[in-house]
Image (cartoon, rainbow, N blue to C red; front, side, top):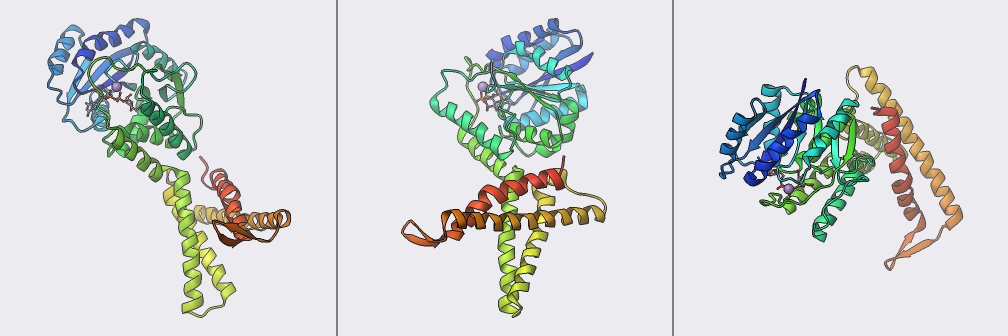
Length: 378
Ligand code: GDD
Ligand code: MN
């Protein structure tokens, strides 16, 4: 039998654990292929959780583990729990699950079915058909959860995953082994976003099953909403390949200008040649920075010939961009005219507005797509 280990991080959940642990182990009756075990990671709750677990350990032989940790946040509790699981328990899958009855233990066999189907990472989703968030959640919490998920979804350009922040998941251990050290530094709730992002970058196959999230009835929530918002935004803005690609492109623009300016004004070089050198320097730096930064999870490695090929392709796409831009300017000038536009009391030449429109709506999405399809393929 394969072990399915349910990891329960707990801080002051005595009353919930009393009924939840038997309800989880009850699931064993529904399966003959999985050995269901529980790892409680308790952060010094001081409410007799430890005594309760020790009693359960006597009742349910070899089914329950207790790991005691200092209180360092949900992410840290999971990190330590998973590390302990890999070293001491060696399960086939680990679950993430809240210990406050928000997550229905009756869903455990449904998660395992998806694993049997070949998925590596199964998410209990509140945002697919059949899933839900509690009606009694305040409007703030609803907006926060929905908007948060939309921002993450856009940032990572993964429209198919509907619930990035859910805390009820089942993960194959090979995925955990690949990503655990990379997510070690995320102590707070953002750990859950980080582990999913890294799983995707390691090509884990993801499935979602509907989850009806229930509000807790006992105890209190430990989430720090403001901290969670800040950590989530920071994570997305520093890990989204698309945003990193935008930063690299903006830097390229500055490099192009600076190099051209230095060559023209300090070295008195020819303006046309200087601009060419400036542009090519920016293309080179964009290529290198995208390789080691924006697309580092699928970066070109190994032989120098691989780099040269990639760089040549990158140059071709850049030339394509120039042509698209010229053609776009031609069309817009032709159809919308070549007059100055009045914006906020300033008069601006129409071509500058056209250029911004073309770059934002054509060049940026087009080159991002081409890089993903031609240079940094999966
Ligand atoms: N060991 C340990 N240490 N456990 C912790 C800690 C900690 O520092 N902080 C929280 N927990 C435990 C809680 O005792 C509970 O079992 C579980 O982690 C979830 O914590 P809650 O405090 O109940 O979280 P929530 O209901 O506000 O947040 C929910 O939504 C988040 C965002 O969607 C949960 O489902 C989270 O998992 C989810 O990330
Ligand atoms: Mn909760």
